[in-house]
Image (cartoon, rainbow, N blue to C red; front, top):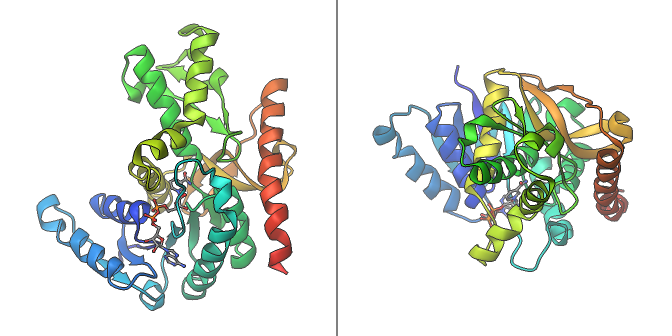
Length: 311
Ligand code: NAD
């Protein structure tokens, strides 16, 4: 039987997720949105690309969760994106309500699903969904690190004029201004990045990766990035549905790993059919550990705001 993925939020990220999941024939897709007609219309449009592109999956749209029943994965992209001058954290209270209601409904209809969160501020929205869903921690996962890493990899490849496929990198921490691009672990076809670029150049690329989302918001003016974000979420869906066991940086619930407790923070995880199958703890040097702690502290500040609302 074909797998089933629900994408909540048929906006820019959600619709592109649906398109990519269909394009890779990973699963049937149900798009859900509060705006009447939009998920139905976009769903039909994506379905009608099938004959041209050559994919045989079903894509439907709905304004309620009935059609989402028994999904294997629910990707939550519903909520407001930021506009120029806003940080992701500015979205906290508005998107808390959206993610809370989306999670309640989604898990009621798909109690055995795996949740992938995309809505910002990402790490706090993962925490919200985890509290509401009451799923085991391996089944609530946040998308951010793959995107932040993709940006870092892109800038490294551009700087060195090499294929992006040769560049591997890792970004840890919260999905915000304090994220921790791990330059020490980046490599190009196995050659350590630190042997290829001087520190000033590396620092410049690290900063551009940190500001990668804001750079696009500044251009778009009315919203935030969606092509690379939807590609990143689809990579997670694929690794889970195909049990590929890819090691990817994702937001995971930590219970003491890296000295962090009761927070979602970006760390390397193995993604397979059970969701997060392993959290990898890499040895960090002093400054990396300090940067990660600082990033976790900024995630905690947001949790402290929403915790009282959870009752
Ligand atoms: P968008 O405005 O294009 O789409 C959001 C959609 O959510 C809209 O269609 C809206 O009607 C819908 N929606 C609102 N409330 C809903 C609800 N209760 N139930 C169902 N649908 C609802 O925005 P976008 O560009 O697709 O971004 C979506 C979210 O993803 C934003 O919060 C953005 O910040 C976040 N994002 C995160 C990352 C990341 O790396 N984690 C990357 C890009 C975007």
